[in-house]
Image (cartoon, rainbow, N blue to C red):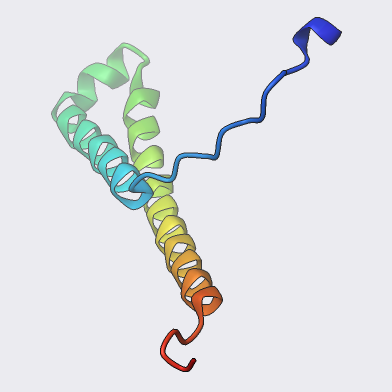
Length: 90
């Protein structure tokens, strides 16, 4: 297994705009749900109704994800501000 051992340090994780990413994905799932609603009968007749409910479940879970990443982002900002401390008291 030594040939699979990494020989360099892992890079820092990328912290992009996570809130926007999760929000965009959640909106996409709700749009897919709404787009499929007019075809409810077809989905039911062809035993594909789970597609509709998958989109709804993903949208609801996305709302939980948006709540979570907003709280996480706020906590990271508080931590950074606390670590920086008062700059003008020197």
